[in-house]
Image (tube, rainbow, N blue to C red; front, side):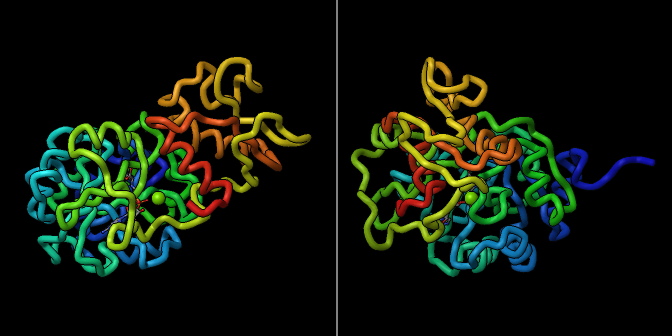
Length: 312
Ligand code: TXA
Ligand code: MG
């Protein structure tokens, strides 16, 4: 008998067909695996919130195959357009005023007048989205509050029960979620640090606003990205019984290191995977070495602070 269901990888065409039929799909991207649905189908979008246990006030990102499609659902000013030109396809999400309230339904936007949009850098993701022919919402494929899945197996384990098709795109090369910036009323603000760094964005649009009203990301829950074991961060000396996730040469067991050479890209790619491995290994507590806060380190430290339960 031919094997079917989410345990085996679906083709891009099968995934697109499932999306068009209002079903959920596990979608690989360069950042983390997503749990995808047609952004215009309110019932399908509701099924995402239910499968993840996600609060409905937290809006979703709409994924499109290219910048021209993005501008059919969002209104871009010159700065949004410049960001799209430089960073797409890739791990940047732009929040801008919504243009099409039908193809991105109210629930997908949590009722906001803005929409978050991104063109993923993963070729299989773009192929599925282009074949589906609709904007595709895809939050990370974890259940709410848990670490985002960065492998096909982890994604299927988290939310495979809810999908009709799951596409295997290999391990996610980036490993942390996209950078989210808002471009609203002529102001650009960083809502979530990610693998496109603050410095890279400022090189294109100039200095960023520091948060502020109207520029908040409703989804920045306090405890997020957390493994089952409690997490302690910026640890120089682990306590008895703590599993140390090191960073840099000679720190802790190299098999558990985020990056034995002290490479931020490698650490980002390993972060959520190590959390899951630590849980699987039965770790009762996790300690993490200090990570420099510059560049990609800002995104890693953001996820670590939330995993440790600190207000962001
Ligand atoms: O890398 C990623 O972005 C992954 C992959 C699958 O594409 N997706 C992802 O989605 O991380 P999610 O739902 O886990 O995170 C979306 C973030 C949340 O913090 C949410 O609050 C914010 O984007 N967001 C979405 N729409 C927004 C809006 N209109 N205004 C402000 N923030 C928004
Ligand atoms: Mg998420």
